[in-house]
Length: 113
Image 1 (cartoon, helix red, strand yellow):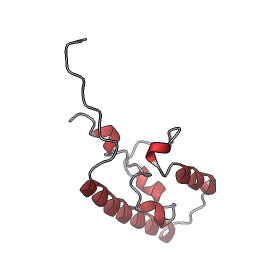
Image 2 (cartoon, one colour):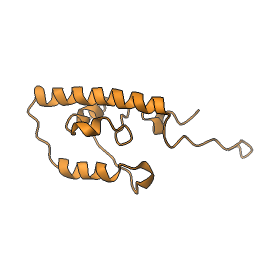
Image 3 (cartoon, helix red, strand yellow):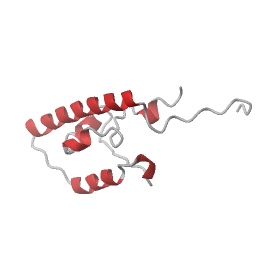
Image 4 (cartoon, helix red, strand yellow):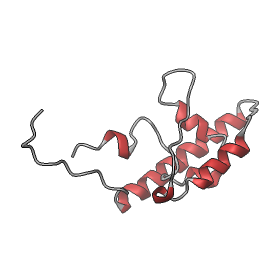
């Protein structure tokens, strides 16, 4: 391991304003489309949604989070996250700080700049 290399700069705590606006628009559109698909073309039964929403509400402020939140899907696919959003009320669709799309989460995928 090279000890003489300069320390890398940590990723920003929050993405830029254009990124946040774009993310809110994309996630809002995808979440709304998922909701339309989930409730329009299927019979949906969700267990534990109230507890999940309480957990999301407690995590609203990224600085005040005390622990992580893990969601697990039953297979590997990038569509799982947006389909989960489909069961959430609309107000959660436009909050990119409280949703994650594993395909390109800013705090995971783009940390090496």
